[in-house]
Each structure stands twice: as C-alpha cells, then as structure tokens.
Amino acid sequence: MAYATTATDVQARLPGFTLSTTTKPSSTQATQWLVEADAFINVALAAAGLTSPATAANLLELFKSAATDYAEGHVRMALAAAGGDGGNDDGKDLIAGFKALVADIRANPAAYSAVDESSRVRFPSTTDDDGNTIEPIFQRDESVDDIGSSF
Image 1 (cartoon, rainbow, N blue to C red):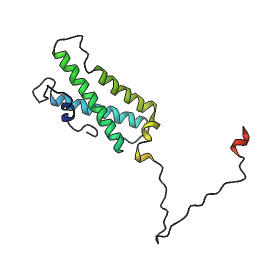
Image 2: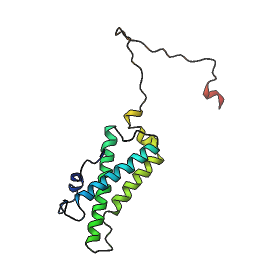
Image 3: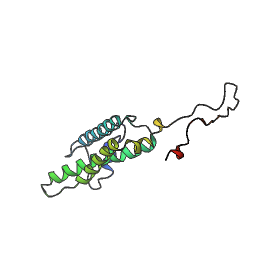
Image 4: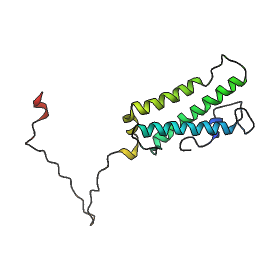
C-alpha cells in the first residue's frame, strides 16, 4: 500500500480496542479498508492527470493520514454496529472527510500538483560539458504589442 502501510496506523488511533485477526472488525478488514482508500486516491489522481500513486513527500503524508481516516472510520462504524446502537454514527465523519478529499483532488488538481514534485517545471543544466557556467539570455520580442496597452 502506498499511503497507510498497515493496520498499525489505524490501531494507534483506537485506544481501548486492539485490532487482531480474531476481533470484529479484524486487522485483516482494516488492512482491506486501507487498500480501498489507496485505490480511491490513486483513481482520483489519475483522473486529475496527476502522478499516481503520489510520490511527493508532502502528498504521501497527507494521503497516509486520509487513508487512515477512511479505515478508522470503517472500524468505528463496525464497532458501533456490533454494539447494537443504531443511533451511533461514530466514524461517519472520518469517511465523509476522506470522500471530500478524493472529490477535491478531482475538482482541484492544481492544488495537489503544486506539491507534486514530479510535475514541477525543471530547468536544464546551467553548465556545459566542461563545467563552464552558461548564462541564460532573455530577450523581449519588441514586435509584440505590450499587453497592457490593449486594455
């Protein structure tokens, strides 16, 4: 998984409850919810024309937190359901926040590409093969009208 590596990240947010292979929900189910979260994020990134999976350090941390929210939300909802309390919607807000992030990636890809190092503009080397510094030359084409004068 690209963002939240194991159910341990989810477990850290659940004091008083220990995820294991025999609990309901189980650590296996929590791991599956992390896989689902990664898939949602990667599909949104790809749909937005961004690198998928994300590679920029800032995005990795953001998406790790969001994927963990998604899995924690599902664990909390499962625990509430197992408790028989139909009015307990613990975890619902975490899942809604995750879904809002995924929707925002699609709706506002520029906000995520700004921190995606792989999509940044890169300049060619400023030294030649002999190690000499090459100074860039900027010229203005005087034949083009000044943009300010056309208003």
